[in-house]
Image 1 (cartoon, helix red, strand yellow):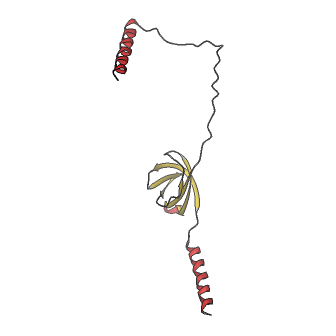
Image 2: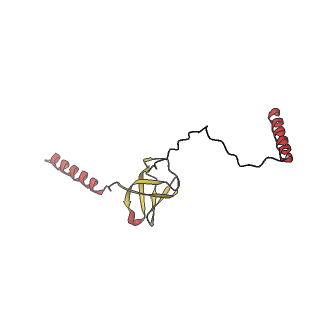
Image 3: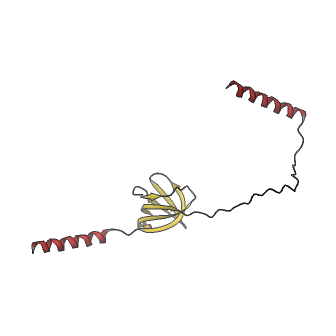
Length: 134
């Protein structure tokens, strides 16, 4: 009978601990400030301060990035503990750089004056001397 009482007490303790634990939630926003200890996230008109002491996983993020934060706490308090940060990646654009050799390359420039040529040649000679000294 004594063992049965311990089993009931143990089961009640497990349910008590399970009900005390807070649920992991997610939100998304834009990073307005980020350092080793805290993350400030803009969600609409609100700024939420996330404590990063319990951070378990994080993508590489920068100020201005859009992220999803896994947290425990209430956002109404404007402070919560972050447990995970995931970067929302932006779709890149691909530029197809094909050169069309049938077209003439147009250069809109003015020929150099003799003074400019002499100045550039002296700069090149000076650089060559410095490179030869090393």
